[in-house]
Length: 190
Ligand SMILES: Cc1cc2nc3c(=O)[nH]c(=O)nc-3n(C[C@H](O)[C@H](O)[C@H](O)COP(=O)(O)O)c2cc1C
View (tube, rainbow, N blue to C red):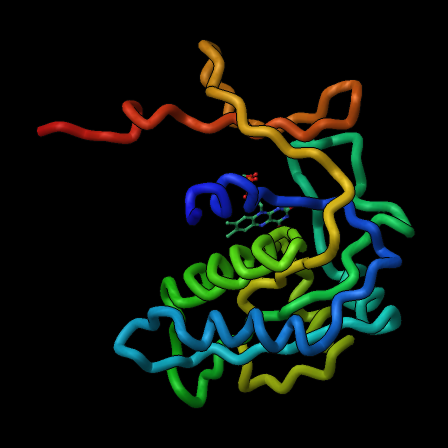
């Protein structure tokens, strides 16, 4: 059921790093992005795949994790993603990419969950450093990085408390809590 996949499709930030993700799996995920909606059907997104430890380490060094978890610098060695998909915008096709990267990212993340994986969409990227590390030509804008792997953490959805706080947090048992607004709070009536 789609609702189950969407519920399960949380942002996971700790992984069984030693569980590999094959290049073929990543290709299958990008194929979901390929089939997704694109403004004016321009299809300006391109993708770089990483599934090998050395390149994974180079990408990891360019990312910032979980800004609300002030005391947590990100996943430690052994709990880092096993793969990444870097979403690029091809400026030879379009100058701006609007909502395409978000739609592509969601298709990929849902596919990952269906495949027994999980991950995190990351926009907090040292883009110049990543461009250098992966030798990405100037023609491509770096839009998002999708971190992927076999999740090694439990993430639960909580209703927003009376204090209205939207910050995610981790409890003493290491469970990651994500407050979500209620459905009725989202609906505006004129
Ligand atoms: C566009 C976008 C950018 C994000 N960038 C980051 C990021 O740079 N680092 C990070 O740890 N999480 C990032 N996230 C994950 C969000 O923090 C996460 O979606 C949010 O806390 C809600 O949790 P959930 O995905 O489990 O619903 C990003 C999510 C989106 C949609």
